[in-house]
Every structure is written in C-alpha cells, then in structure tokens.
Picture 1 (cartoon, one colour):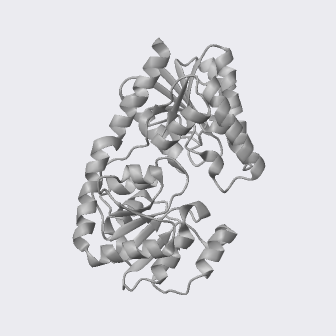
Picture 2: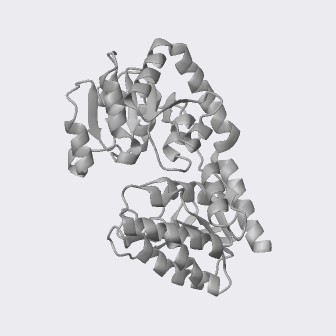
Picture 3: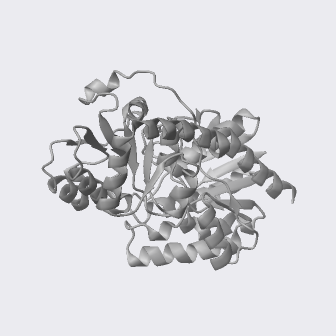
Length: 369
C-alpha cells in the first residue's frame, strides 16, 4: 500500500506525541514493504532530508503563526497528495477535518487521528476551541475512519458525534529500553534514586503547580527535578519558578537529548506525571517502557494505562499527591514492584509493533472495503 501522512510537523519527531506516533508507525509499515510518505513543514532542522527510517519526506511551507501553522501546511498537503495518488491517507488533528474534504472529493480514503480532546487544551482561546470542537464533529461524519488513542475519548466521539463508522481504539505506543550511560546523572548533579522526576512542558494542564506545592511539604532529602521550562518561556513558567524557595527543587530547563531523557528516567526514584487532557499520554507510556515507578494524575485515561499496579494515581491536590509520595518513600519495595509491573503493562498492550499492526489493519480495511 501507499500511505500518506498529513497534519503533523513531520519526521524525525522533534516535538510531541503525534509526530512520534507517525514516525514509529510509519517506519514499521515502511519496513514491511509499504510506501509511506510524510508531509513535513519546511524551515525545520531536517530541511532537505529526502527520507528518514524508510519514510519518504515531502517538505511544504506554512504560515508560521500559532493559529495558522497547522492548517496552512495541511491545506497545501491535501492538494499535493492528489499528485501522489496514495491508497490511504492518515491525517492528524481534528482542526484539519474540513481539509479532508479535498481528497475525499477525488475518491481517496482518509483516516484521522484527532488526538484526544484537543479543544480542552488551555493554550487555545474560546474561538479556537469552538472551531476545533466543530471540526471534530465534522471529522466524525466526513472521514472514512477515526482512530482514537484512548478508550474514554473513543466512547465520547461515538456518543457525541454519531460517527459514520465506529471509531477504532489504537493507543500510542512505547519501546522497552535499558540504561546505557548512567554517568549522565552527574551532569545534572543527581544520584540514582536521589530525586523525583517531572519532565514535561510548564503549562497548567500538566499540573506543575500542584506538583511543586506537594513536594514543598514533603520531608525528604531527595530532590524534585523539574525538567521542561524556564522563566522566560511564559508567565505561567515564570510564576511557577518564582513561587518556591525550596533549594531541593531544581529547574534545569527543557531537555531535548533523548539519551539524557532516558537516563533521567532510569535514575529517578519515581516520575510525577500530571497530564490532564484526555488521551493516552506518550510521556506516561515512555516512562513505563523505561521501567520507571510512576505517579500519575487520576484521569480515566491515565488510570487505564497504569491499571494492575503499573503505577500510582493521585488526585489533583497537593495533599493527596504528597501522601502518595510519602508512601513510596516509606515503602521502597512498592517502588520496585511498580517498576516491574510497568514493563509488564507495556508488553501487554503498548509495544509499537502491536500498534503498527492495528494501523496496518485499518488501512487494509479502508483499501479493500
């Protein structure tokens, strides 16, 4: 099959979950003999690269503003893809739903992954949220197949939008890795099991303030390593950093080196995950794939991922999180148990090879039905 991927920044993945999903699934499908094409935004670090991990790259320009970035690039890609003549198109992002009409008018099959409840994200204003929500409803009627990465989101789409075809649940995935360079911890002034780890963007929907307040009241010599932002990034980040005088809390800024990200997970006593929006969090899956003990915010989708003791859930309050942290400090045997169960959970449902199998089946159904 020839499969075109549209609606993301491109590959290699350098930003978020959608790009990682496209890269990991696309590379595996390419290795199986399918022709996989990914539309990439120009003016990126990878400009000029014709292929990556077997995925062919087509670069197109975009209007580099917050509200036009994705839509302008996808608009061009949806017209260009008509010259490529794919067997199936995989689009991402519900805001792109109206643009799926372009290839649909010419008889092409389109599957769309809407990335959870994107209209709930606090980065969007009221008008943008309304547009994304309306687009999600349009996608349910227009696209040949919706691919949803979380059970609760799948059920919501099926009930609220009355999809033309039942949405398919395919989560994000992960790989199981081992530590290769534990000496990396010394670069950050850290020791094995000597810190709790937070590694995500400093935005309200990641519960950063709750995590800081919970740790401030915790009696422990361990550190809280808050990787993900600097005061210059936003008012929220600046307010968060300036709100604490606790010398145990470390703010190193964003960390992009994958090797360092991996070793920080392996070295942590536990990772604190605070993702609030719906969907299967790629960061949460990545941590489980490293065998990290995880405390995650108790949302339906986070709780589904760490079921069967693959992690600990906490409520959105400093007091509850602090109590869960103290329990892990008092019971290191529980930390070890959660680490082992984390790996079992990934093997059970989230290996990228399993995810690629499911995407391949969706495309085969679209082509042959």
